[in-house]
Length: 332
Image 1: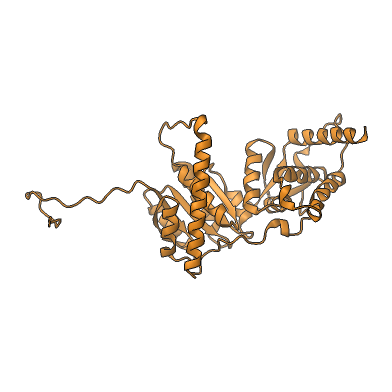
Image 2 (image 1 turned 180 degrees about the vertical axis):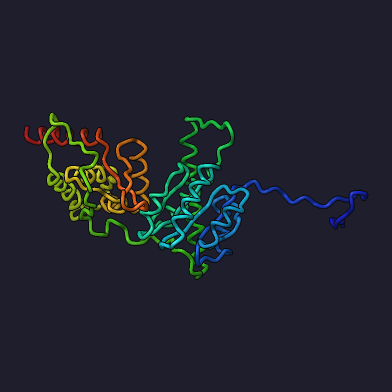
């Protein structure tokens, strides 16, 4: 048998080399989670697990961590140091390109959204297994090599591969939660916001938003008319399966138009409720609408931990003109 014991440089034997692990690295920050339960999850997502760190110890761990590709943070409950941790994470993400997955709850989603700065941060709220699996797979995909170019003709194949990987990881999470009874953050889909009261929850504005009004040459539309349309969309679920008509972007734009006409501010959590879809889906749509310039982030002057979402002027004008055009069609 070959001897792999230590040999001095003067001998002919050399110590075996540990195989290099080129998988993306994953650091998990959470309270009340068993580190051993994370290994199969990280492996199924294509990560090598760097370890598990409690939220209170996370700032120091991040300072000492030489390199990390992805950080997964479970922060469903507000803590005194959470804001500092989120700011530190976003700062490092911007500086290093590190991917961040924030798993917030309804108590912390406003703060988490207000701290978002990096384009590589994914914000989830009470996610189910599939949503968490998709976030992990997307984070793993985020390791672009220097000068890497994504070819458009490969996009369909890549999306198919991502779908298969998400399904595989979701099945792993299912099997893991069946085998263990560890007090870990729940992967179960909690109460859907479509099951919550769908009435508008707005914030009174300190002043008219932006100080502007819709152009006088556009059709006249009132907030009551917009709200009536939203209510009409909601009652469809009383007659037909509600999941056939999920249109969160449109519902959010209508809700924001009504708020603009009422000179009210809309918080992130309120807009998620207006979307009538799971909160993680709503947050993803808010980010998409922001990137497309249809909505804008507005800081709360009295609370830096909260961000308001407002309809952009051009989007408000386009929606108002749509209302006028649709009424003309209905009356002809």
